[in-house]
Length: 267
Image (tube, rainbow, N blue to C red; front, top):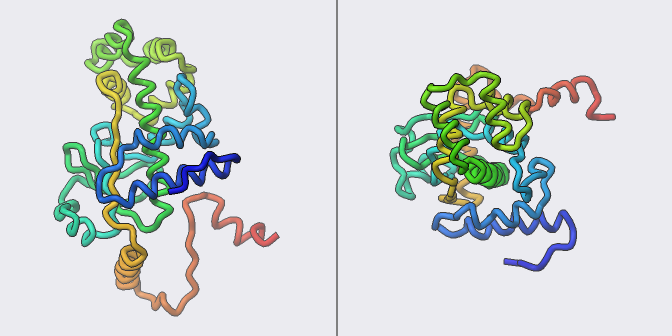
């Protein structure tokens, strides 16, 4: 692996990507902590506060929306292209696990109820999305952990989690002051975490996050096989001969369909 010192922002990004793909080639678990340094050096616009001791609320909320609610219980994230791949690597019953999802992502994922999250991936772009999100979430979670070690704030959070103190705006203001966050950011985080807000803070106070990720298969053949299975399932479920019709893939962005229909994308 090329570990020369980068000279530009693009090279920092390339180093980060090379680092995690090199590590993921192994069949062993990759500890996310090994990626924290290169992640922070990218100076990503989605994680501008990665190197700062203060919580980057925008990054934390961005990640929380793209990870299932069970993520706070997860230690190991296992990535695979198909049920066959999972079974071949010792995870034969993943689809009997609890199906979970994230508000802003639609990947199939299953939680074993203990510490393992199995996530189906369809391309390398899924890896390029999941790994930085896990890294950013771990960085910000561990900032929360450090900031919540004060006895007074930790007791206050425990009382919130137990219901001894009502989670009203005064309580949110106290949490904001204790964490050094803007009140509006804490309100936003409360909306994203919902009823689990206080319990998640309690979990963050109790222990730092130490994610590990394992890629079960990464060959082009595995991706092609997974895509073929997806297409067979799709074509069997529609009444039209879709193979003889034009196909348009619509992304999750709200403007993605409007742009080509309006002609804006061609200007």
